[in-house]
Length: 350
Image 1 (tube, one colour):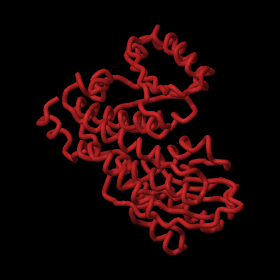
Image 2: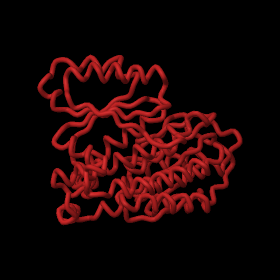
Image 3: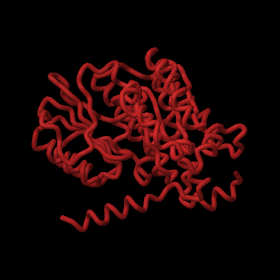
């Protein structure tokens, strides 16, 4: 893949954003360390993150990563309204990268009315305005990026905020490992040679195919969601997926009738050595069953020691795969014209 072709297709230079992601993560960690997030946590009964799209995935990752440690329920709300239980004993995290996500702003106003404990993270917009008016803690991050390319800003400051609030333990060791891993992989994934670049090599296998992503439920469900979202937004291709063991109780049966379409699908198993032992057995058996219907099955394993590094090793690989998939399809990975069209049409209806 030559640089001239990449530059011609990637007009908005998504390459630079991906190559610079480790630096974004370092800056995001610094923002989180400096953020003032003092608030009362006594009597806190649940955490709700409000966000959509790229602004919500940080909340999803936080939920997955902290699941073994948090002692209160944590959910991500992708809606205009809040669950009925939200009230003064709820920490509501408002995550809108642009600050102008209409669903999130509606939920934000409702959280204020219900006197919830609110923490905001945004680059500006209505989210910042509402936070200042209500005197809620506000973590301000740099703007101007596609929200899906700002994952470092939407995740790491919130992770550090939870440590400051005493809800989870200090994560400096895992943060250090994650940063080092991302820096090392950036050099590998930016290479134009598929022989030495596994992201490019995998994208070449996925070209012109519908991608199916399977992973474990615990910890890697959000990584799965991220892969599918990035393949859709960057690669301009359809991707679907499910988690184990749940898919063994329903979706697996669907691998039977549509033999011709299934033969053209490419199935990715996103795997981690710490997945539940029974889930690992299920993945092997599921892979064998699906192998009767498609020859295109790939196992993608996480890297690293700590959970945070392992999660981000797969996330960063998936981001690059989706990027190269866009280039191979001759599509600029950055624009999301149909989403902008939908927002414009929605804006006409009050």
